[in-house]
Image (cartoon, rainbow, N blue to C red; front, side):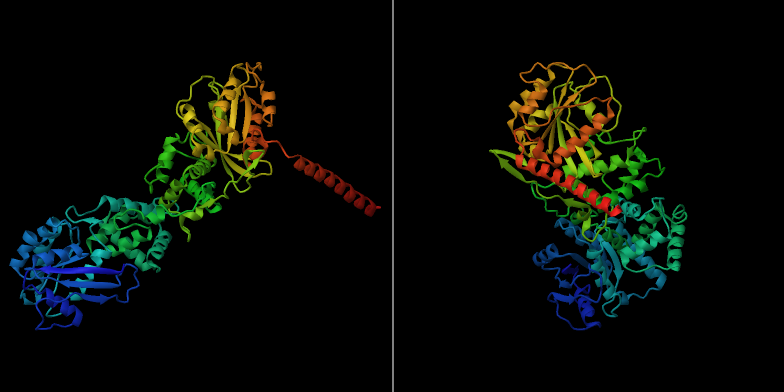
Length: 629
């Protein structure tokens, strides 16, 4: 913060100029000018990043209304002074109402000056504070704090100036409602999130170690056993259920409320700002929406650090250790967030991923869902990483990685995509005639049982699961059934660019099923730029001759691609082979892009390589044999 502008207001003769002079000179000056010019006070030796570099004090004349109102509109905080019963009455009757009429929403520090003129004892002074200041605090939420001062004795003048700074840098109004005597709902939500993220073992209690970590993280200093015991004793005195083998959530909130009531709300802000809260108690945009440069032809995936964070989160949230997240466990996991992402709800989570027999999301399904989320909209993943407390010197972008841009080449006037070796998440559109088995294919991908009952797909549906390809590499495949949006999606070039492979399905037992694919390709010629795999589903039934100009095998041969795979949901190995082929085709698209003739040169090179390998093997065997002799 560069500067804070403090405008000193009040009736004529209450001592506004004397307070400013006493603050600057550190002593009382008898004869001063009627109206002081603005004064700049440089930053003190505070190490807090929220301490202003400059504090500007602006004296005002209550009779010059135009200038007064102009200064108020430019202020960051108002130092409102009174000194007797008459000027006190005008605080609520005139001054505070005037501020409201100007439409300004500024914190006000109320100052009772000239307390050196009072002859009352300590008890009477304390009662006067209660009678004068508490009603104003309750009625006017903009009044942050109250203080008694004496410019003549230089009593509490520095403290009053500090309260003005603090009203801007550590505002109480977002945290505490003086009228209700309670923490505000937004503050409670923020502090509950802090508690949840600080409770590393998720046992709903902050133990001594977790409190020490929180202290060090927020205030960069350790806490000893005596201070810990003092905190617990304080909580025990204000909250019956505040401590139980540590600090409970109720106890943590009660402690923060106690800090707000006793003027120690800097402590609350120290905690909240460490957890990236703004003055409006919203999470900082830098945390939720960090910048990530992504090429239009690149995709975004989880990095190893991102996977590790999500695995640890799953393990901690699976409180009953049954290998799945129940609805209650999911609700608890998403407590520090706005709830399950809308993107997940739109895709009908958890029907999108692998679940156990109870319908609970497994670790495999949990990671797959996040892979799909990151692929479809990485900004959602970044925001939720921020909500869930992911920490790294680089921010939440460290949990993601951007793949190399996809490249295309042209051969004989036809474009095709180049092979990729740094991607692990692929998107596949499943296309085909109604009743061809698309929905059952998606269900089988999630290892769910086959159902005979046919239900047409109206809304688009997507599922995601991991696929282990040859060599042991783990990839994730997103299968999309487009439903009634098929025409809109296939005409949308942006959506086609996001697709890595097309899976053309037909019912091998239905003679009219394959013609649908022929018609689809003719209607949308842009599909030929994508790699494809043809799949004959229901292969366990009697195969029918297709009522089509070309039979499937000859048709795919004319496209210079592999013949259809014959798949049955009762043949588990065939399904696994299909999913592997879909991923491998997405990795190396050229081999399955319609109309792209394979290079003879590559075939020759492969043959030479095979021969060379055989010869090398013979030579090595011969050397071993003769050495043995």
